[in-house]
Image (cartoon, rainbow, N blue to C red; front, side, top):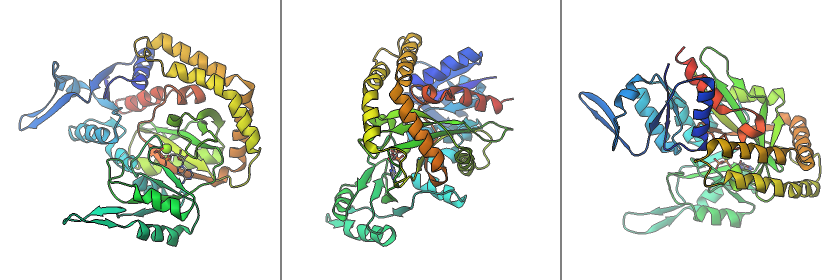
Length: 392
Ligand SMILES: Nc1ncnc2c1ncn2[C@@H]1O[C@H](COP(=O)(O)OP(=O)(O)O)[C@@H](O)[C@H]1O
Ligand SMILES: [Mg+2]
């Protein structure tokens, strides 16, 4: 049996996959996918770095876990691997859907899953004409948004963005025009404007793991990671938000499985991290001041955890650093304030479970440093099990 781990460099998540494979006694071959060349000609293909030929290794590898970090590089890698007959976690059709929020959302919608009201306007707010003028479209785009979503708060976001980058909240028409006027076509938003109704999700959202092995039904992990904070409407962990474990109500797990099936279609094995918000409205089970005060109490132990997470030497001493990371997390998690906020999130999610809205599927989620510690789900085990199921 041979599984290939394809990635740019071995970062912490990939080192975690390697360590997990070693623990499980599984063979894992590292294949770099950055400073290499792929040559295709009438004799076949070669894959080489400056000093090493990976062509034979590639031929002998039966299945690949694709951990290339950029969405574009991941698509390139999967396209190539599938073209030479190698199965990949995740398959190309999944990468293609997950690349774009609009593509993901239309697929979820097609399968009857509730989403935040979403609009796409295939027109850039500023356009250069051939004769050097600039056409300004933001007023018309704002009118189209008003026509469908009224004058409510809206969120503008890049179609292919990640980590909360470029995700902006417009609370009035003036702010919307300003946000629109600053949009430039880019690699994370090649064309047009993606807009969503602002979901009143209170101070947290959910990161939910769903995976499928060949021959088995998709499985939603019972615990999710809530990402929480009151300082920004964006709850991404990359923005420093707190994390809590949530026992998912069965209803949300069932919808998550449906989402996985919608994105996974007929693929035999895959792993996805879904993002969902619960539209709480005013149904808050505690007041904001209390939540804020409890989060403030957590700031110190969470900072201490983040300090270990940011240790520049972490890759050199992975095992000992990982131990320190786990200890710092345990210290954060064992505090009374953690318990209190956790209770609030769990109660709120259980009470409002039927208002869950799924808005994103991630095909290459980070997991070692937070998801694993919060939920107890080591995604490396799932990835390896998915890969193995395609060989058995
Ligand atoms: N429609 C929305 N209503 C309220 N908050 C939102 C909405 N869309 C996004 N957010 C917040 O912004 C964060 C980032 O948006 P998301 O669509 O997940 O983009 P990214 O891919 O950059 O993570 C979400 O985790 C959520 O907290
Ligand atoms: Mg997100």
